[in-house]
Image 1 (cartoon, rainbow, N blue to C red):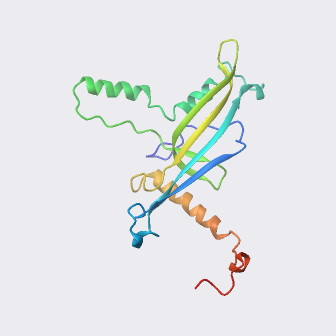
Image 2 (image 1 turned 45 degrees about the horizontal axis):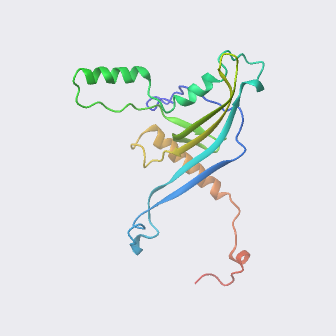
Image 3 (image 1 turned 180 degrees about the vertical axis):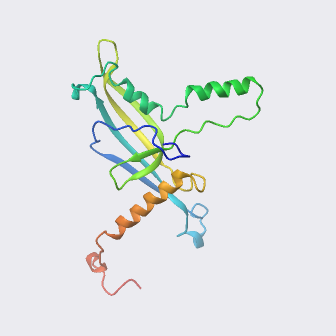
Amino acid sequence: MDPERGTPQRVIVLQFNPDSLERGLAPQAAGAEQGDRTEALRLKGPAVETWKFTAEIDSTDQPEVPAPNGIHPQLAALEMLVQPPSARIRANQALADSGTLEITPIESPLTLFTWGRNRVMPVRLTELSIVEDAFDVDLNPIRATLSVGLRVLSSSDLPTGHRGAELYLAHLAQKERLAGVAPAGRLSALGITGGLG
């Protein structure tokens, strides 16, 4: 999506849901690395959250949908999440050729990963590995397996007021709501009676 206006620029829908996905959360502890015992329980920001999954795209499973280029368009749309636009590269080359000393790196659109309505979060693609398994007569890929790695962009990663930072905070608030409806356990279920004191 456009980070300024918030308008969607492209929606990429995976044809099949992955059978499984791997999520990782690494807390950002304050002082834990230096061994400062007074800081052992303090957090300096949101946990670093990563996602990994494998997905498939297969044009033969949708024979009613014309695919003169096989699944090239779907693969290209995914690849453009990690590529700067060619026009911006040319513009930066022109600036460099004219003697501009400092050229700002190209900002990519804000990518949102949606895994159901309860998990919508801003992400950066950290890994995209594509195995093309089958081809048509023009050597267009018609089936591929994708390995995708994502890093959730938190409010610590983005400037204050950035649309992605606000979307992350909404994602975190949704987790808090879900945690609030989780069944409450009792110490007696752990075999502990009389409290922890």
